[in-house]
Amino acid sequence: MRSLFLKIFLSYWVAQALFFLLAIAITLAMRPPGEIANAQAQEPRVLDEAVEAYKSGGADALRKYMHGAHDTIHARLFLFDEQGHDLMGRRPPEWIEKVRTGRIHTADSFWGRFGELQFLRDSETASDGHVYTMVVELPPAPHAIFGPNGVPGLGILIGVISSGLVCYFLARYLTSPIVRLRAATQKLAAGDLTARAGSSELRRHDEVSELVRDFDAMAERIENLLTSQHRLLTDISHELRSPLARLSLALELARQRSSPEAGSALDRIERESIRLNGLIQSLLTVARLESGEDLRRQSPVDLDQLVQEIAKDASFEAQGRGSKVRLTAAGRCLVNGDPSLLHSAIENVVRNAVRYTEPGTDVEIQLAPEESSVRREAVIRVSDSGPGVPQDSLDKIFRPFYRIDDARGRQTGGVGLGLAITERAVRMHGGTVTASNRPQGGLAVEIRFPLAAFEQIAPEKPAATVVG
Picture: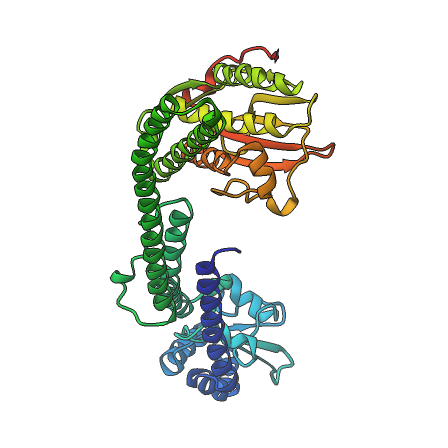
């Protein structure tokens, strides 16, 4: 049982019900009702008088005596001979017959006090040598736990239902803030920084409500920090673009007025300027992805065609290192999203694989639809034969500006934003991206996108392999 509400509710309810039952059982066991004690005291006398009435006047006299006894002790009497025949010629109910034969506990025993219908039984041998057995049916006990045939009595039903209602509202009172806190936590983890557990609506001041208030304060602080970080990142990127544009203009003027000897220095300035411009563009892309602005333009995208274009471009770049890009596509994969964002997300992974794979080795791209437990997905796997990534860095390479080592980043010209852009773009499209080291060496990156709704019934294309 995983629900805290059910644990609290059922445990309290069972405890209350057991306490209720034990209280009644102990009360009945220790102090028999007055009607039982009174009937027990009169039972031997009533049996003697009933036998004498039958012997003197037969069934009519016995019937008259029993009517009088009913008015006196408020109980029904049944008198039987040795063969079990009712001496008044009646057909007794089934439970009376069970009492006569000892198959039902009588009220003068421990278990007999718990029934709604209670009985007493007594036998004697008369002066004529015959054995007579009398069964006394007492009035229904209002406090009985079980009625006829083991059916719960009214008292126990009222007790169990009332205790259940009390325990239900108590459990709901205790767990409702936790349910709201869990829902707000899930929204916050999904990227909704405005998620709150609603501490302002709580009128309670216990430990759980204080936890909800602390969560809302924490969520507000996180939202303010991330909003400030996003605004700072955007402002800095925009402010750097203007001086960078002026720097490019000044560079062209310097080329026109400088001597040939200054050409190498100016070329270095130009390369650094281009690199800085690319960094600013990447920063702006990350800022837009964090704000969700780039998902306003969605349309059906054929991943098969998109990945083929990326593989063709990456293959041209890989030729300089003696490598190839191999694409294996099996099945049609349509997703809803922004084409440019999807292109950038996949291209960053493929170009990263081309950059780090060993010279003369191939980069493999696989695209295929797969059925998961909840939905159909388009799965893209990009594998290289490079040095791989340390195990403790696999979940960090998708963070902005994260580089495994600065030396390798400077050699390749990377600044640690390509995979960060990929992770945010994939997440905004409802997908996931993970990285793992291959057993034979190299890194494998897996991207999963949910297939478009109309793709669920679209016919699949045959497998195709493209070698670049």
